[in-house]
Amino acid sequence: MVNAEGMLADGLVAAAQTVAGLVAAPQDLAAESVTSSIVWPWVVPVVVVVVVVVGVVAWYLTHRPHPVKDEEAVWVANSGYVEHIPQMTSWVRRYRALQWAGVGAVLVAAVAAGFLAARPVDITTSQGKLATRDIVLCLDVSGSMIEYDQQVVDVFSELVDSFEGERIALSIFNSTSRTVFPLTDDYTLVREQLEEAKAALDPRLLESDDMELVDRYLRLTAGTLGSMEGSSLIGDGLANCSLLFDQGDSERSRSIILATDNDLLGTPIYTLQQAVDLASSRDVTVNGLYGAAEGESADSPRAKEYGEALEGAGGMYFFSDDPRAVEAMVADVQSQQAVDLDAAPEISQADKAGPWLWVALVGVTLLVLVQWRLRE
Image 1 (tube, rainbow, N blue to C red):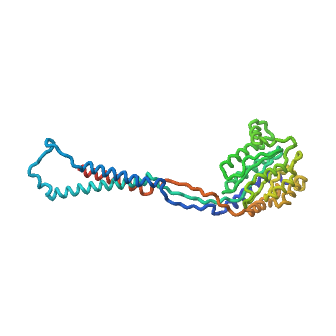
Image 2: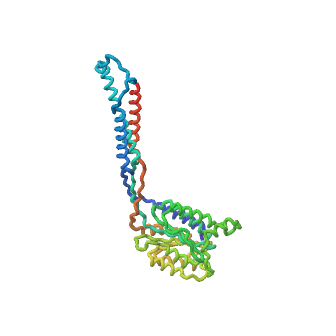
Image 3: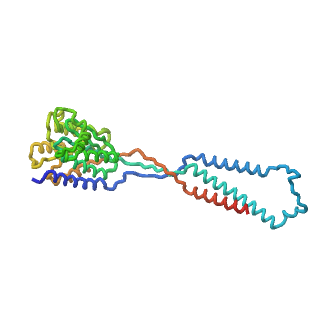
């Protein structure tokens, strides 16, 4: 008989690699469209109007007639011919042209600044697809399963990296159940919780007096010893996992990965068979990981009961020395993939100055050059 723990670890790693390859198969989960828009379009005409009004007022103040007192005037005799000198006429034309160029530069810079102030943006609309696979990891955290649970959680953590839209949940049980996290596609939360579960389900608990390990295990499993009727009540734990699936009227694939050694101690509300039947009535497929004790054979009463209950409902279960189990269960889960569901569109916007920043810089640069020439 091959060492049960070692074979289970090898099988779980193989499962991770196989499922990762299948789940990560290319698929178009989202379509994006990008449109350009202006957040505050009214800013542009306001800026233009303000610039025009300021320009008109400035022109009026500089061109309005105002009397000149005799003592302030400087009269030059015989100077009327000056304005008819060709050089003078040319100089006046250049001066007027530079003035109008300055006005144009101000308008260009003002309009560009108006568009920048109006916030041109690119709006990206992503119409995503939600993968319709819901998976609940259902863990027996009784003392006899400690040496296997960490491996199971570790593999599940690796699978999360390959998920895109799948919802997963984690429920743990002993005499009662506790939902660590419900069905979610928030993979940041999932990874954090799985890391905590992995640290808490440390097999060194079985042979160590480290109170830190004990405290972490007790924090994780708080609520799983809510009954004094026994421990490792597998049927009740599985029944609770079956009730974690929501959206019962939607077309979704629902699977449970049940990890237990089927070592029942006490009187449960649901037997294992009744819990499997409950899951089947809710269109949930139950696949199992069997934590075989060292030296235990596939013909042992616990292993046979476990396998018959799951296989009788169309599910599969892993046993430590069954090399076909991993690939078969992965194929079974993949075959249940339903059509993708439309997700709520995600809309994001990003500021995009576009050419207006450069137009504003050109306008300001032109205005500086014009003013420099006018001063000359």
